[in-house]
Length: 288
Figure 1 (tube, one colour):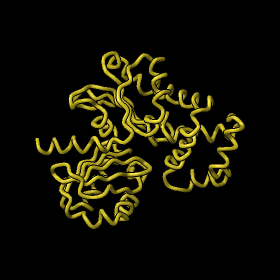
Figure 2 (spheres, rainbow, N blue to C red):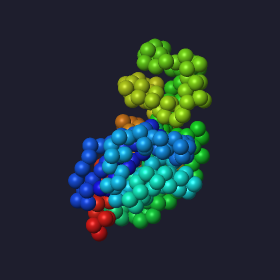
Figure 3 (cartoon, rainbow, N blue to C red):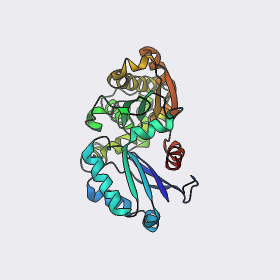
Figure 4 (tube, rainbow, N blue to C red):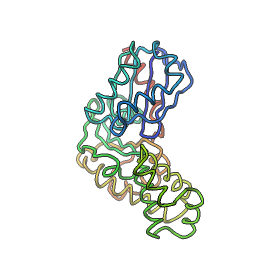
């Protein structure tokens, strides 16, 4: 049994397939396994909570894990050891989530492209057709995640409290969420995964895209992300497309295309959930 795993900070999807790519279990979902923000103990606890994973762990021969927080060596190695200790019969591979986005969005295995993730978090890399190049080291969600779900959640909360949000949206926002200051601070400073908590507010933005305020909010976030991340690859952008993966990107395609015209880069493919494209990629490579 082969496990293909796609993990953000919020949730983690596990697909179990046989050597021919046939799905052998219903898709398994656990909480996100981000080793940059979770302890080893918390990672183990999250995996062990899954009844399906516990029942089938000894049948697993390969684990291909792609996740947020796996872009630097120390957290990536910690998570790999956690997975190896649980799936004792399996070969384990752990890669950053950008590689999942690459395999899911490129049109063929050797296509060069700039590939972006806009989900709970955000990232941007250049894939030259064989090797991934990252020009900015991530310093985590509180500093780096422009145009991500947690970025927009933070902006919505700030605009609500600073009275920059239109009055009709303020009323709807307050009806949908608990906006008491003490409750918000408790979730931000005393609960795990504050980035995922902030990202939950982004749903409000997607549901209210008929508002000029929301459209401008989205565009400004994408503009900042483009300036800070995509434009790291100015030379490459002259000849390659920019692909996008993640739910924020998927639901904000129009705004992304508008900003692409401002900065003169070519938009390529959009993929909401990269995991489906990973199955074909790994089956082909195992057979090859």
